[in-house]
Image (cartoon, rainbow, N blue to C red; front, top):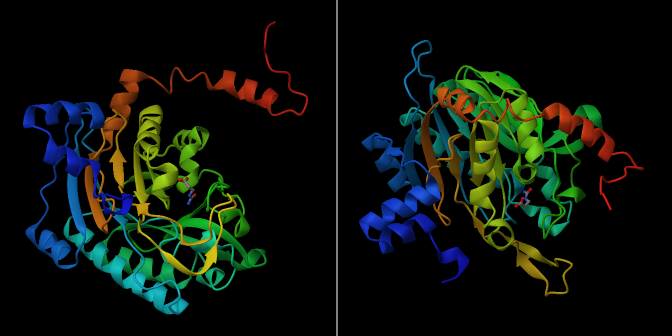
Length: 383
Ligand SMILES: NC(=O)NCCC(=O)O
């Protein structure tokens, strides 16, 4: 069975393991068992009709005496591109708006308060090609481009915060391109944007050909439902990136991604989950699905044959909690909507138990890092 035919680890476990072993294996692999979230039948029917995976889970926290629960429902959407990569640009964008718009409608039926889409969700992940045209034509203004206007409509219609990762064209700065997440509040105001801080230079991820390292730092957006931040894709390999969003107060960090099986799949279940544990917050990892075919062949600079695709984007979107528990992943092969309900009080409860922030010794590391980045730095090796 090839990577793109293998639906999910979770499915194999459920199919192959006896009940008692399954409980233990789940405890070890996923942490505390989560309750299933009761989703309305109308949403289940709509997901089936529209052919996407719909799953729902609950992360609980202990009741407190002084604080009421801070319950929020989060929706993660993973999807294939809809039209072939050589279809006219506007048609591709419009088809993706339609598909994802329908999935957001189902998220609304499920009571979702904050929804996040995958990285560069309005386009094929064409950066492997190194060609500029037509891919740069997918770039839009973060403030008032077609896609942001579409997200504003969704936000207002469903009273939902929308996190929309796009290829941004920044007309104020000479038409510069950025890889950017736009955050639209549930009343339809653009709260701001967060640009991708770390650009991959690995495999076919030739993104440095297109845009630069982000210059927006580590913004955290105060929404009606909690403080959120967006760490885009390759940023998840950088523990300091997660840390800084958390230091700025993020309670929930989204990681909209586009990544392929042969490159990163063994790392995928670990990185966002580890960040949730290390930073006493929730993390939400989202990956696209499918194989995207490009008309012109490209090489990977590894002596191997030229090819027309990037490989299989393996989906598997999931949510991780600060106590180390995580939801099962969505399918590796199908579009999907993952709905999780979490009580954000869990963040402080876990922080008070494990004290990673209190014991972090940031002053020591700040001092040592300041020295380590100097050109004449001498490593502390005793001989
Ligand atoms: N889109 C992106 O940054 N991909 C890089 C590969 C990875 O981080 O798995």
